[in-house]
Length: 338
Image (cartoon, rainbow, N blue to C red; front, side, top):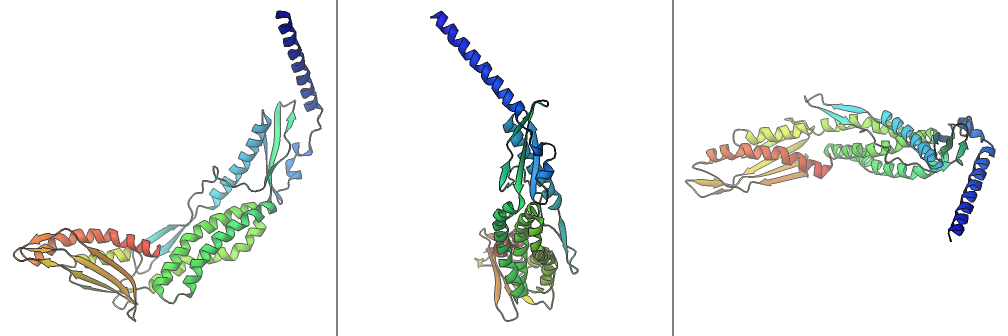
C-alpha cells in the first residue's frame, strides 16, 4: 500500500508540472494585443470611457480598471457639482445662501452603464496582468437617458406650474419646489455630460432655465408683500415674533402689501380673580379678493393663572412667541415645500 501511495503522489506531481509548463508556455506564446501599448488608440475618448488596469492576477487587473473609471467619474462630478448661488433681497438684510449642489459621493455608488472588458493579458517580463475596462459612450447614454428624462419631468412639473401661476405667493412656492428638484436633475445631467457630452448638450436650454430660478424666486418674493394685521396681542410680543418669522422665510412685510397676513389671538379666559387663560392663535394669509392661501393654528394647552389679563399675557406670550418662531417655519415648509 505504501508503494502504491507513493506512485499515485508521483503521478500527481508529474501532472502538475506538465500543466504548469503548458500554462506558462501558452501565456508566453500568446500574441500581445494592440491595446497593451496604447489603449487610447483602440478606445478613442470621443467614443469610449476607458481605463487600463494592471495587477498580479487577471481579476485584480479588471477590478483596478473599473476603479480607475469610477475614480475618474467621481473626480469630474465632484469638481463640477460644487456651486453655490445667493438669493439677495434688496428690502431685507437677510441673504439666503442656497447651495445648488452638495458634493456627490459617487465612488461607492457610481453607475457604470454598458461596462465591458478586454480579455486580460499576462506580460511575463512584467509579471503582471493587463486589462482595459471600457464603456461605449453612446450605448451608455441610451441606457442612462431615461434617468435624466425622469428627473427633468419632475423638475418641469413644478417649473411649468410656477410660470403659469398668477398668484405671486403660489408662484414663489412652485419655484422653490422646482429649485429643489433641479438638484437631482442637474446631478443626473452632469453625469450624462461625462458619458456623452454631445447628447447631453441638448439639455443646455434646461440648464439655462434652472439658472434663472433664483431671480424668479426673488421677483415672486417682492410681489408677495404682506400687510400685517393682528388682534388681541399684548405689548407687540406676538406681532414682533410673527413678523420676524415670515421675514426670515423671505417675505416682505409692507403697509400696502399684496396679501393680508391676519393674526387673531383668543385668550380663552376661564374664572375670575384669579383668571386662567389658554391662548389660541390663528394666522391667515389672504389675497385682495379674500381668498385664503394659508392657515396656521396654535392653542396653548397649559393654563396660565393671574389676577388680571395683562399679567397672564405678559407671563405666557413670550413663551408662545418662541413656539411660533419654530412652528410656523416648519408648517410653511411642510405645506409649501420651501
